[in-house]
Length: 185
Image 1: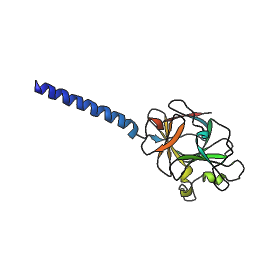
Image 2 (image 1 turned 180 degrees about the vertical axis):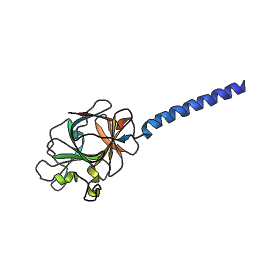
Image 3 (image 1 turned 135 degrees about the horizontal axis):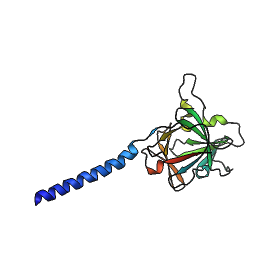
Image 4 (image 1 turned 180 degrees about the horizontal axis):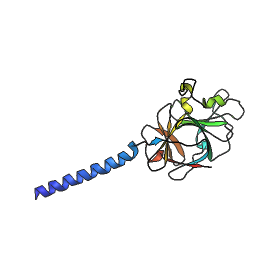
């Protein structure tokens, strides 16, 4: 009888280990490089909540002070490809863009009254074909998960964007909250 109990315990342990590995495996496979064309996209999380810039802290171009003027709430993002699966996330009109602050928090540059597009980084690799090191804060790699959804990974801090309810943050390890749907408009 003890052999049967021992066998049952072993089976239970094996099942738990398999379930843990399958769950972990789902997010250890961070996907393959995405191939999205330039253009406007509606980006939503797995709860179908749109990724809007009004949930981000804005930094104005003049003196880099946090801005009091707020942009209109726009649901869509304009993606501009810099290199394979690396993009800059602009808002319509390209007067606002997503970036990673040195505190590892997602923010946006908002510069409606400045001609300072360079805040969002170089839109092409340098003359050697490499990404501009000073622009990495605004470069995001988009990776496609096997489910068809996407991860958004910042090139400067090497962290994944995650959205819980209507709050954005970065995380070192991808999870369910890091998955986004991109719908071309």
